[in-house]
Length: 271
Image (cartoon, rainbow, N blue to C red; front, side, top):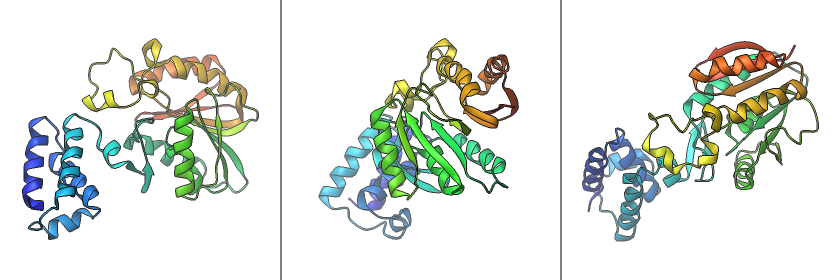
């Protein structure tokens, strides 16, 4: 079978199961299998796929047809212009999380002296590692309750040459020093929500869902911010916009103030 024929057949199958990015996904699967760029496919449509690569491509296509996220099939995902390794033990990075980085860069644009930042529930390490690479003056610690996630975060830090610390912890339960910035993309999906995509059933439930309408872990973290944020410190939390009002309310009860909301991100400060 030629590249053109495989792509045509794969695209149709993906479209038939309701995957909107059908052609793109087909190209990415085949490019990954052939270890070539997508542009190579476009220039070699009449090239025959060898039997071994053909079988591998079909196996990966079958996974995508079962709605396994493409990032788990290829083993990587782009975030803020960098490639991060991902696995089914961590959430797949979302574009909305990049807003947190953009906000942090604004907050730190004129800083010179070292500051401490902790990425709570780091997963694959995207937030903390990106923060360190964009702002080298930050002393960054990545924390997660999941040992497998921390292994992956360390792997990404090494691959991207980011000098960060890691520690296994449940939120800030065993924190030992105050920090200037907290980034947190904790589980916030309410299991009663019915507008989630079929792909998320393949992502780790413990990293997606939380009790109390999705707010249990965030509600546990907010009081800890009062203790561990330095005066003038800032926390940027990701949550569904429908949850922001409840988060701000509990933050104000703990003596924190809102500094703004941007899409999925809510900012809190300690004065």
